[in-house]
Length: 323
Image (cartoon, rainbow, N blue to C red; front, side, top):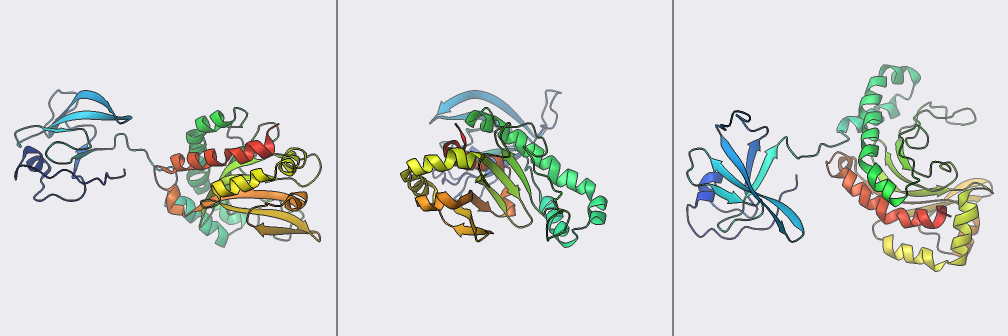
């Protein structure tokens, strides 16, 4: 939980009830924290040996809902009234351990698995670590899908949120039949939001997990006639090239953009935004994304951050992929 950083008002009494209750000897810049176990000791019996928490009111203030609490600390006399923001005497923050604190979806074990897979990319190793893969990769990706699905469906009701391998979650097995690289497994996995009927042909919003980086963004590929990029995205951009420049100004500071073209039969990466009409005439793929360290995915607020990213990038999907 993120601590509040606003400094409390100076205490008007040297030893006010709040300061006695929270155990402060001098005021700090940040709110003191009172950590209460949850469930409360003695809950159900009507007697709490350590403290009694009474919900006294619900106040709507500055568009935020604050739970007003009266906390009675055994042995400290007067109650301490707190909204979790600030009391007249001094600031006070109350945290209930184990209650109302969202758990992180990914852990360090997810990234450790991918790093070890990169070093031991063999079927024998994967067979021995299949349970780790399911526990620390597949299950967290499905949990992330559950967390993001409501917001994704609001953006586009046709997004596939079924959790199927392929449309929603990428495969870890590589197709090595015609590949020079014969390693059997990918060292990254993707959660994708795409139209259920055209997920192979159109754009996607996605989250990527790999050994050393996490990405969230938009991507679209079109390798020939009949692709949505060729039939929908490219004609729209050629009609309105200023739109891409507008998106570059809106998103360029926070998001990385690059695109692919075919040059002399080679798949070629081009850094930056495809701003010129001639870029789109040869464009075969376009990615706009934000890169984050693995630690970002191990925070409880990761789904909320990803939701913001995908919402910011949805106009790119809509412009290039929707009829």
